[in-house]
Length: 448
Image 1 (tube, helix red, strand yellow):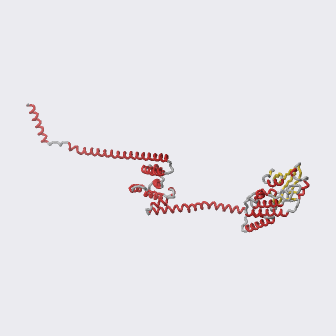
Image 2 (spheres, rainbow, N blue to C red):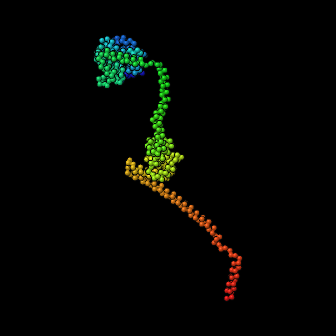
Image 3 (cartoon, rainbow, N blue to C red):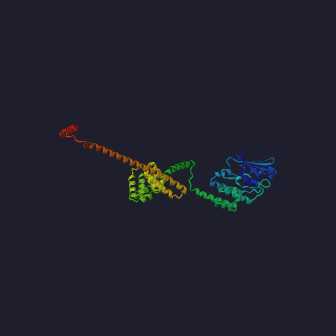
C-alpha cells in the first residue's frame, strides 16, 4: 500500500519541492524536472555509493526524476519508530546524528537534516535519505546556519517531545523551553551539542546503576501479584478509613449521649446526637433522644408525664421517630408517622408544630404560605370535629348505660315491695262479723 507522506514531510517537501511516497520499506522521491537544475541522472549517480546499505534507484521518467530508496528490514524510519526508543536510546541516536553532521566533508554534497529525512539501524546509527547536490538537486548550496538550526531542532525533537520539529526549527526563539531544550538552543556549535548529550548520557548511566534489570515475564508476574494484593487491600483500607473517620466517632457520640442521659443532661443529649440520622442510631439511643426531646418540649408537666409513661423501650420505634422529628423541626415527617400510626393526638400535635414551621418559613411566598396554613387549619378542624364526635358517642354510651342501670334497679325494687302493698288476709273472726253486718244492712233496706 502506497502512502503519500505529505503531513510528515511538510518541511522536507518545502525544501526540495518533491513528492514523497512510502510503501513498506520503500520510500520514493519524485522531482519535477522543470523544478530542478539536473540535466542528466549521471550527475547524481555517485549518490548510489553513499550509505550503501540503503539500495538506491535513480532514473529519469519523462519529465520526472525518480529516486527510490529501499531500506533493509532492520532499519527504522524516524517519524514512525522513534517513539519506541527509551530515553537513553534517544540520547545515543542524537549523539550519533550530531557526529554524522560534524564528520561530513563532501563539499559538493549538502546535508538536509530533519526527522522525515532520517532512518536508523538497530545500532542506533542514523542515515540521511536525500542529499542536495550542487547545481543538480536542492539544496544547491551549503547553508551552515540553516543546517545547524535543523540539527538543534532535530535533537530537541528527540530529547523533548513537547513540540514538533517544525515548531522547534521555525519558532525556537519564542517557545517556552525546558532547561534541556534551552541549553540546546543556546549551543553555539556542534561540539557544544555533543557535550550536552554526553553529560546526560552519563547522568542516565548513574541513574540506571540504582535499578535492577529483571525479565519482562518476571516483572509482569510481580506486577500482577502486586496489583492483586492492592485490589484485596483496598476494601480493607476503605473499611478501616470508614471505621476510623465515621464508625468510631459515631459510637463515641452514642456512648457520650448515654452518659448525658443518665445524668439528666437532656440538652447535651440532643446536641451530641444532632449530626446523626435516626436510622444510624440503635433503638436505645433513639429512645434516649426521643425522651430528651419530650422533656425539652414546650408541654405542661402533666402532659410530659403522660407522654413519658407511653414512651418506653417496649414502645414501637415509630413513636421514637415521631418525637425526634418533632424535636428537630421536621414536623412534616413526624406527621407522616402519626398518620401511619393513626394516633389522633399525635397528628393534632404534629399539625400545630407544622403550622408554626410554615409561619416562620421565609422561603414560601405569601400566597403559598396562606394556602398551606389554610390546609393545615382545615385538617386540624376536621380532627377536632372527629374528636368531638367520638367524645359525644362515648358520653351517649355512658348515659345510655346509666339509664339502663336505673330502670333495672327500679324493676328490682318493685318486685321486692309488691307483697307489702297487698292487704293482709283477715283473721277468721273478723271475717264472720263483717258478713253478719252486711246481712243486717241488707234486711233494713228491704223493710224500708
